[in-house]
Structure formats: C-alpha cells, structure tokens
Length: 113
Image 1 (cartoon, rainbow, N blue to C red):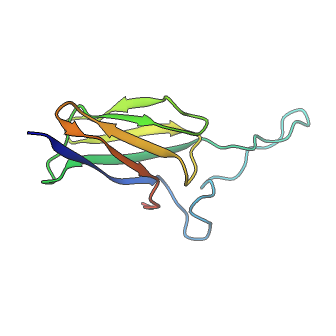
Image 2: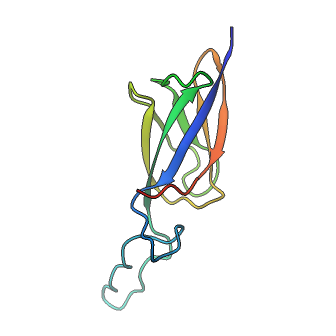
C-alpha cells in the first residue's frame, strides 16, 4: 500500500507585523570597509511532514528543488519536524519523500510565529 505525504506549515520564523512577511525580520548588516550589505539574506524555515491520516512522518527527506539552495536537504525528526537555513523566496519549491509514500511538493507558506 502506498501512502501520500503532506508537507504542512513550511513557514518563515520570526515575521514582524510591521514588515512584509517576505522581508527579513532583522535590519540589514552595516557596511564593512565601505562594501555594501549582501543583497540576499539567509532565513530559517521550518515545517512538519504528515501522511494523509495526519500521522507524523519521521525520517522523511526534505529537499530544496530550485533556487540558490537547490539540492540542500534534511530529514524530519521523530515528530515529523524539520528546519533549513538558507536563501529562499516565495517561489522556492520543496519536496518531501519517504519510502512507501508518494512525494509531496510545496512552496513557502507565510506562517509567522
């Protein structure tokens, strides 16, 4: 029997209600020796992987499909939770896979904590 994975609540950590959710939550770094600050800021994303019966999926592999972090991956913990830090935007796609289950693909959902 093949089940299906659901990639839920992939979101940005630390959104500020006074700023755009896609914007970094911290101020840009100061210039060093006159060099401009970086144009891309790394963010931490986190999420949970469930099956269609909402059981946590420990050991599922989460991989970044596109964007500057394409190929980056991690595995879920015993509660189906994972986190990644890198350069992501609202179009970055992620895929969750685990043996015996159909893969699930998702983009970022803005869930501010």
